[in-house]
Image (cartoon, rainbow, N blue to C red; front, side):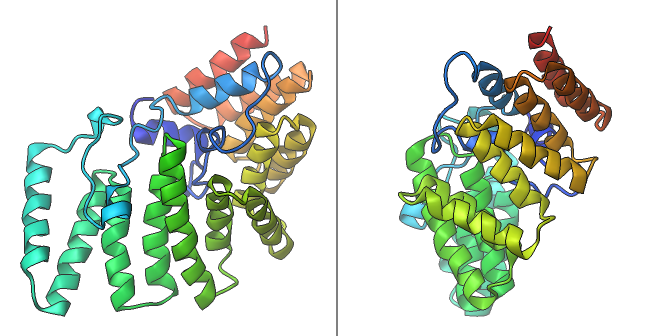
Length: 297
């Protein structure tokens, strides 16, 4: 599961990839599971994110406004020479370009190039330039979503806070344009988890469920938050709700199994884990489920 796509098949909604935030994000900003009883949940989190956030770009674009490069935390994400040359050439062109319209076209190209190499904060920087030139709900959301992808893979609290603050700023602009954008509100709620006011994040997620009680992304993230605060009974409720809304939600079934195991419902936990495995042909998911089942023997 060293590849980003492999780990995402475990922790994101398999069909639409709409569940952006996974359990790997939360232990750094939420109360960690207790020793002993929470060991299985901790192992599940590690299994779900074997690359340990290695795809996370640096926050250089947040702090300096410049494109970010590879860092020691993600050596396997270093750009290939051809990609680096293309980006370097486009960056030079962007810097030299005087015509505003042409400059925006180059910014759009750079955003696409950075997204292709999973340098999401750098992509966010250039998408933000586009949004500033052409402000609106969708342009701000594209920029915010890119920063949120970087936030999702952050490996340190410092990086989470920097990227989370950027998410808060840009999703705030999205919601100013359209307060009913529930996807933006959900992501904003998760971004608040890395702030000094994590309760606001929970409030936003609950607001999403008031507006849309079947919102899979909000239910999923509230379930993860319950697990991280050791409220396993509540997590079971959330993930059961999620699997009722969508029985084929791989993530919901997987974490339902993990949460059930914490409550001592071993038979039900095994059933949920086996269900998760049946919903995907991803070998990474199969390995993750088998690890959890082994712990339940």
